[in-house]
Image (cartoon, helix red, strand yellow):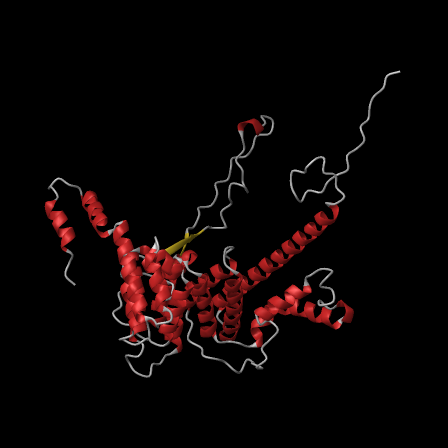
Length: 438
């Protein structure tokens, strides 16, 4: 592609005494689109998307172009996501219009438009890996072009540098373990010995992602790394992704792991035993004690949603569904995505339930494949999920108890003095005592 003439013209028109920083700033101003250019580009991309969708979904998607922020409206539109998801499930080839639209949108200068295209990365990656090996060499080239576009953009942003993390050295005591003595605490009778210098800290640096090499095609040896880098780019913007995209990400990981056996419920045996013991007690069944504590019914409903009580199809450890290779370079960014979907406070219930099911399937797969990193990561997420659900249940039970108490005592409480908080229990006022002098 020939270079853009705008930066060269700006460089030629700049005086000889101009600094490189000012030239770079002027080039950045020229590449950054204005508000009207962003809106115009978003509207044109939305209309192009509406033209390739089925007739029943095209009017709803085309109406998004008339909003004040078309790209943001496209990102948050459930109708547009469902329509394009259906088109991706039916395509994937070199001439697929849905893949061509995603490829062109990923090269847009508008960040909201790139987010709208990046939201389909989990679904596209899932369809791509589950269809391998392809029936024809060009049947999945559309998916590969989109993945390479995300990979190339991430490689350009990193500029050939790895992603590092600094781990603190726990052998060096902190200030809270060895506080410095103040001059007022020193006694002349008992001189303190000279302080022992702390050992020199060893900086531990971990490599989250190695330097990225340019890739012209998706080779079998580089496939997991390319998709892993794409998921790292997705994780960097996951807080802005719609819930449907997060659910597709969780479902994709569960489908890749494919270990739908009883082993994935290994860490939930305590909860299952509690439910079975209560059920075998007859009158102590959660259904009969629902009016008393309201705890067993909620637990049964959650276990049913997450399929904790087992599968009716009788799956066992010997029967496996479609599985793909999960090396650590792919599994590491995927586990970070699952951690956000599982523990982020603003995620809806369907996202947390999908992540809870996916992380248990990954745990079963890691136990069968004996992958220590995956076992540790998935087991930690399962324990955190159990703790979060128990805390939420306790808070809900406590809130319902306070509401019942305040509702029964509110009718008899005196209304002469309003309380500062609605949940504060009212106290009886003590009788006034007067001092009388004889």
